[in-house]
Length: 344
Image 1 (cartoon, one colour):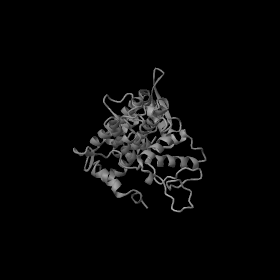
Image 2 (cartoon, rainbow, N blue to C red; image 1 turned 120 degrees about the vertical axis):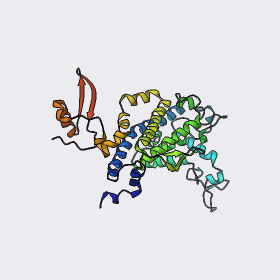
Image 3 (tube, rainbow, N blue to C red; image 1 turned 45 degrees about the vertical axis):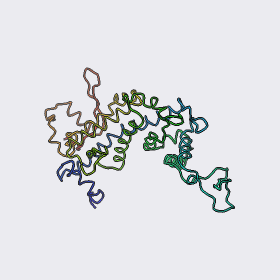
Image 4 (cartoon, rainbow, N blue to C red; image 1 turned 90 degrees about the horizontal axis):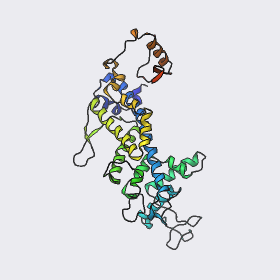
């Protein structure tokens, strides 16, 4: 069997139709997309971890005043808040299982009870199910499902859903927003409220889902002027336009990290975690995979002398080296190239 037996035709066709590469360049472009997706992961991870830790810290340090007696804003909030939302949003007749036989253990309203006297749930809200799934996965690993482990095991989608209006209470101060908005997002642009912040995170979550499903991360569509949502009948064509849009989304991710904590963003940039993405997300980045001869800047290694030969030797063995000036390191270089190095 050949590679085409394992990659669907529709996955590859878009590289010709939308990215406008030649048929012989499709597989190279496909691997460029893999490298580009990998280069985005550090920013996605940074945003997700920063968001979840900020929400957790805000609840513990600034518990909503109206939550008293409804849900506990302590270390167990991760299970207690979704439970409260479930009790509030779902009618009892749908929320709890009904007893079908008189011999079944039940309360005075006919709802089934477990061995501890608690009503057995028939329906849960989304967050309750996600918490339960995280607990089960942690237990399968032979670990105790502590609040910290549950928080770490929850998906990005869980945290984005906490930004919805379900967790907003503008009058009773029982829930997260707007109480914690300035605590979790102290650096958000002026005038940004929960709904605007939520919409921004939904856009990034959609992009992250595309990466997780191994889709073309560079593929975009024009927005419908009436709905503001992507119109899948109007794709954007060409490498230059596609890369520009993906860069815009990436810059949004970095900005959103800064909305939560500027030090977190600055540390990310300090260690150059963004540079590989910017290099790959360009026409030259694509050309480095599909047609290196189109890259105009070049160094003739036959004239490079000892330094270039040493660099090639180090890179060919997948090692790192540093470039220095006056004994000061100015750049580290490792084997991160799109073509095999022939050190002959």
